[in-house]
Length: 538
Ligand code: ATP
Ligand code: MG
Image 1 (tube, rainbow, N blue to C red):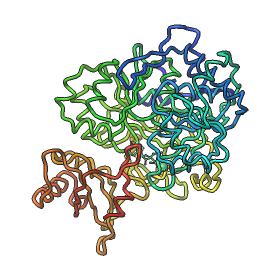
Image 2: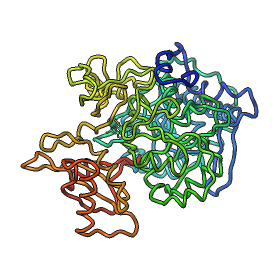
Image 3: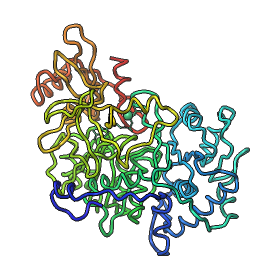
Image 4: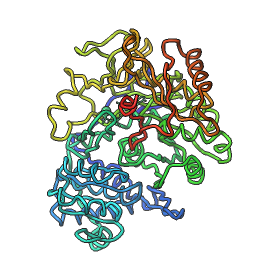
């Protein structure tokens, strides 16, 4: 889509969308490649460490079988199909089958408890669910509360009231005529992370995949190249795993590594990337911070073939950028987006100089600006609201059955991201913070990300979360919550050392006047710092 490598301005000026009237994600990511019987789609590292590979032609037949099962059960175009599974072949098969059938896939994270599942499955009135025994046990507890849920397909057995995914699939035909969906027809509901409140179901059309392609290509330095292999520890239940990794890789016919980490550890992640020859990875900042905390020596034990690392979802920061260059010899490309409108800003080391602490520039095809609340585009350097101009193929259709929230998301033709930032003369966009997280202290507006980035540069600090604490004199003061690195203990001396560290490196008005030490930070299941929880305990 981006064409050949040249400078950013030329790549941007020659870009044009090509969204056909009809488009189906399932056909595009799978059936398109299935004529070549050997083309590798998935390398599955199973729980016991053994590996099983799948070709596109196998995924096509398996998804056709499951699509026939669902159709026979009366699941129709537009019906919602929940998918509650970790990274695994069946997850991908359920997605492809649902799209080809014209259904709406609703990915759900396996760590969700019963309340989170009840909220999401109830909200979208899912008619079917694909899960495993663990998931089925949770569903059994809330099944009475989910009247719309008629079919629960279980991939590793068939507990009471459920259907056996594998047995039914094996009896079904492997021929299936995919529904000829329109590009703007609903395909997917993804719930937001719930960092700022109750998660919202973002309804996306089939075209959302095409909308992601330039961002994926940019954040992975002109993806794909011959020999690329993609992997992410982020679960495919989130937009970052599904639409930044699995589906775009398959759109390009690039194999993906699938593995479920019971618990993410840097060592397992390094080993997996080395063993499977991963060349392209999306590593969220939290994963990078954990890897960095494990020490350079650990990374150096492994032999990597990494060509591109993309990171986003939270501020990357200069510290992690430096670290990535040192241990992987790769410049991490930061990107920015949100569940409703993803990958609209990115860095790309081969066509622009990275500026530490800055997210990148608008991805070709997306019109991103900093505006005021009235919808006026601000001058370079002015802080305001980061917004994306509609229409845009990557933009969500609506919040599922929530017209009011959908209306509030826009001012005129601009989608409001809910984030604050500023843009410089060259179009680089700096993220300041979410609307609610920006700290207002003695007349200054301060973003928490920059201070957190500075804090983790201190050797004693493993993780940091920064918020504004109400203060009579200053309005708010900067307060930092810090998780110490191994081998450090909290003390008044260390506290003032950390304060001085920020004061001298950043600015006197930005140093945390208060520091509290925690064993861990409150995080969403996607690994984002929940600053509102920190505000509650400040
Ligand atoms: P909710 O909308 O339910 O409160 P959420 O906004 O965290 O949750 P997501 O859609 O997963 O849900 O996250 C998108 C948000 O993540 C963005 O709006 C922005 O605040 C943040 N974000 C994404 N990329 C970056 C980045 N590169 N730097 C800083 N923040 C980022
Ligand atoms: Mg959000």
